Amino acid sequence: MISNLEQTFRWFGPSDAVTLSAIRQTGATGVVNALHHIPSGVVWSTEEIKKRKDIIEAAGLTWSVVESVNIHESIKTAGEGRDEAIANYIQTLKNLAAQGIKTVCYNFMPVLDWTRTTLDYRLPNNASALRYHAPALHAFDLYILERPEAFNEFTTEQQKAAKAYLDSISNEEKELLINTIMAGLPGTDEVYTIAEFKEHLKKYENIDAKALKANLAYFLQAIIPDAEKLGVKMCIHPDDPPFAILGLPRVVSTEEDLKFIVDAAPSPSNGLTYCTGSLGARADNDLPGIMNRLGQHVHFLHLRNVRREADGSFYEDNHLEGTTDMYAVMKAVILEQKKRLEAGRDDIAIPMRPDHGHKLLDDYNYNTYPGYSAVGRMKGLAELRGLEMGVKRTLFQ
Ligand code: DNO
Image (cartoon, rainbow, N blue to C red; front, top):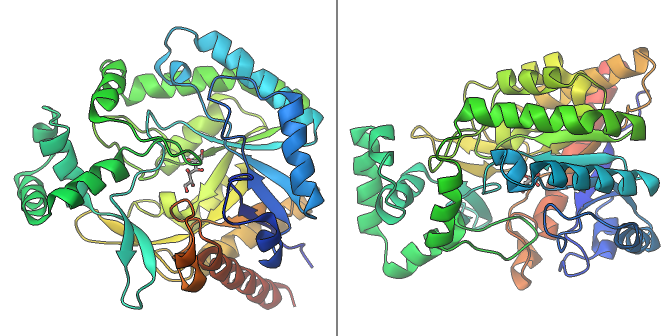
């Protein structure tokens, strides 16, 4: 029988209201963690890594994956200080590898990480979900950020829908929308002001998707040889949402993008995070097909489902529901495990985490990072592990 996927759970560190002992009760054995207090571009020292690792291990868990060692903006923009930031990145990988932590997730999204417009979208059963409502994002872009080019990017119909949305919300709702879109990196409470965000946008004035891809390839070619020597598996996370927003290019959104990335620095260390929630927000991404064709490069699984809506909006659905066929995804993942076993690879137990979850039951009694409450994610993990067992038994017994 093929071994199980490694069940992991994201933990934001000692200040996370979801404690390690709670994580242990979910049945997960691995923790996905980062040193969020260290700014991007700065080396993670051995002491800091060790301190965190000890805390995780004292709770009977393993620090399986780093999510994320963030990429400094100078690397994305080929700006001043890029090579120093890359040297620091490599030093961080060395310090992590020395502690035996060898799977590292990162993303290459300019300025913002993942973006939603609503953090408390109520489903009919009153569970709270995250949502990307296209008219809200467009309203922000056109009438709050007032980005001139946006008027050429949206159809008349989209502009009308955006205006109608803006006219329908109160001032408080408008403030909430701004804070939601302008939220910075996960694991921090940082929120950009509109003025700060505009400054960041300026740095991308001359960077289109082609230039951003070249900067990504430069980064990969610089770090992958060291990562390979260290046995570190890098796994890039797809853009969320997987298309350009607010005039910023995005280059990790489609199968073609993923192919470009693995070809830019061919190595077992140059891999992918297969995030079904991010990739699944695009109708032209064939999720099981991507796993069939690029599965050998996948070092980390984020399993989550979105329900796509006709106007480009989506919300996060139950893990086994939504627009992505999670059965087909799980089957493709298991067939990839089989291929690895047959090829003599030792990375069969690919780390998997239930990505995001609804706020349910006791989740309303304390504050967690959006999408990262305990009960909702545990429900997702429980469903996914059941699905995995069912598919495995059906295929191999
Ligand atoms: C959202 C996450 C992302 C992800 C980073 C990876 O919940 O999936 O924030 O951690 O983009 O670098």
